Image (cartoon, rainbow, N blue to C red):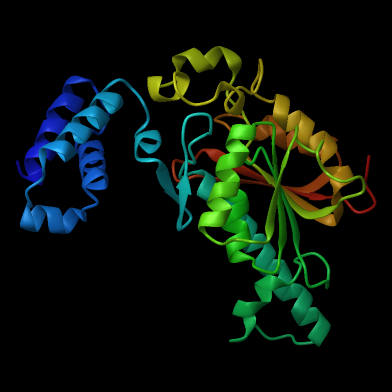
Length: 316
């Protein structure tokens, strides 16, 4: 048997199982199992052994039963990092990359402002600006502190730590299984400026710890909506990483009420939002003393990311 025969086998069975994108999934299953590059496989169409084909049949059956592709192959690409995932940890989504992008823009922009103000320069960014992201975005101190709540696989914390090597990044999560993946991912990418702690939101942090930036992709699905999600999500991904309570906003309330006491002056909070939540969460942020509230749309025009600044002198 040749590798493209295996792709056709997998494709036919995934089509019958009603998988949304059967060709992409069939290719991913076969080429990952065979450790083959897609282009080379289509050009050379190499032979595969019976043992490998048996493995491909097992993987195809798992996908046909609804198990997420990412759990089967064991990883997902996120912000240029290969993130290991498995049952018990939320699978990173492309829309969450928008949160990381906004956090990096915020850090870099404010770092440039601080450095430029310190030097008295008035011109635009210089050729040296690329290295300035190591500076704190909100103070002239050389170390930016970042907190990622509900860190899960650690994808957000690790993407920020990788791009901001001078930063001190912390991630918290209640799931011991998720944190095992987060630490595994940190080790795999040799990212050393990140620390993961087990506990609920701000609970595991040292008393008095303050941060320049708090980010989170918290659970935000309305409890009653979970049964209507795709089977890959409702049957396989951890419910505690999805369920945001009766209105989907339980974690938003907890984060926005607790964040002012954990942010430095002028600190920023950036949250991923669910569909239709932008207005209510924006008002919630203002009620908890945040200003400069901004909502960033995703590529579908949905208000997906909320960004807000701690008002001067405010704490709770």
